[in-house]
Length: 94
Image (cartoon, rainbow, N blue to C red):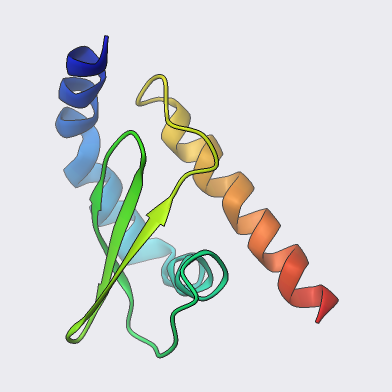
């Protein structure tokens, strides 16, 4: 099952990367800050896999793990949306 999921994710990864980096830079910065403890601006997503995502900004990198590993590639969007909601709620509480 893992190999099938890895193949499924690989097939949709570039479209997901393009979409996130073009349309959701604010969410990416939020993931870096809240889940990765990172600072600075200019974060982009450089990769997705079943366990999480890789971010980069200038010379810095950051690995963000999903709350639970994906079981199917179609779960990626809903997991990212939930993570953004969690991060925004936490930042509003500060």
